[in-house]
Image (cartoon, rainbow, N blue to C red; front, side):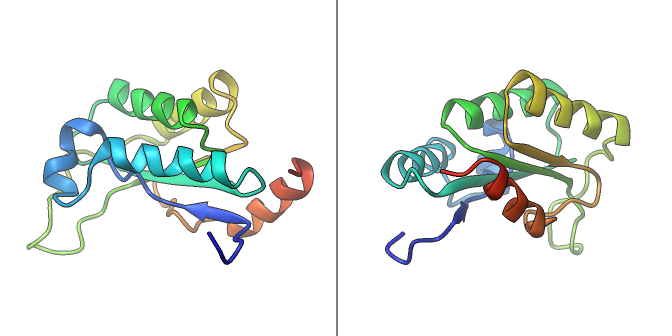
Length: 141
């Protein structure tokens, strides 16, 4: 943070129930705390996080993660389909429909008031980075 970034991204990656399996070295609460501490300590910086779906989580669990990110004052969220990079990695448990991705986006933007939720099968955490610049102009700090 000493470098003064405009945006800090720290991906939450998955739902709490799957954390031990997906992020064995990660701690869900610590990731949320980091995002909130950045937001509080550097109020001019935008916070961004992302998660993958298709690892065995339910839709309600995804909505709960969105709620946690909102509660910890995250500004921007990305949601994308998990695609296994190979046989030594976790397998895909389900392919989320485009309609469900849209429902996640609408919930995040309308119910939780994130500045932006980018949610689609091919979304990645760096997806539409140029859009973040537009958001920063539209919602300056």
